[in-house]
Length: 517
Image (cartoon, rainbow, N blue to C red; front, side, top):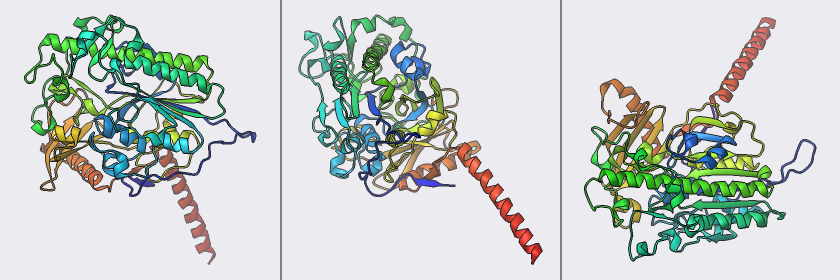
């Protein structure tokens, strides 16, 4: 069985370009364009993911035109390390970015990012909004021909009373046009570039990074009006999992920084409903922006030759497990949406239930566009699922996040622990590596087959075999020794059968040869 190391030393190098593939007739095929859409803090709160509350007709339509990955996991449940990992094809420990302060150009300066690769090979590459992390000094100009951050008053608040020094309220409902907020501006700039690509002879890589539903949860009033506040009263799986270690949690510092949120203690039911209502309003606002992009793509006749990737940079807690925001190793924080649509795709409106990771996206786009594999990439192409969404493989999904919270976000305080987590079948297992003692501490094992993580069952004798397997997976992952099958069970099964047939034939020949001696 072929295997591939999850942790390969070295950095990504430029591969030989082969953008003009050849049809069977000998005619050169036009290179495919790439529209990459990143959405900040988006958990699978979408109709196409089965969320009964979400009103997301445009993203749902996109899902109907491609493959939706039901079990997609990011490498780190926080913006900078998640985006860095996905865009470099390297895991957080490989690229050495596990916080918001470390820039990958300081750790792996010669790495070739996904847009940079296509730029180096003849594509027009434009980045609009939050594709890489959005903080000052965290951009990567070398990856783009042009990039637009579009920062301004709309990134925060539209109402004058909310534009004050420091953080204002956690939500805003303003009766304004979509373009008053930054996401509307991002959409208009992206459409402007789609129009310019219409008559271009060069293929394009257009990265569009939407900011919402990131805090503050601000959206035009019409998207708030799509929902009734009472619909958000119930929070499923809201209790802290039984026997879970304290290190697994944080104090919602991101949310508590806003003026209308208490510095400590629980939220009132009214505040919880308001926040959840606001989050979904922001999701619908972003959905409308996706609709504008897709309409422009169709009207300009670009859709027929454009690969579309829709990606959420991590999940999000809205009170589940008694947590708000991201930055945990729980399922709710690590899982996010992924939809891939290609022009020639036959299996549309398909669901893929395989465990896939964000580091698989870069190899997938290389594969779809006919490029050679990059041996430095930690992930594996998902192209097989575009033709066969039911293809099986045995891949686990890994993610990680550090403690304490301030160290993991700001990078100034020393990290005391790194939580390494694996998702396999119906299990999620996490252990915490202590940087001082080099010991693994606070094991967590959750059965998430029916509900969220309700009880930590690590150490229970009845699941000792399962825990030992998961524990070894995490240890090997941390040490860079994990290997996994890069092929589906179907493909491997055919190879096994072929091998048995070949061996059987060899035995017959050998027997005949022996009989003749």
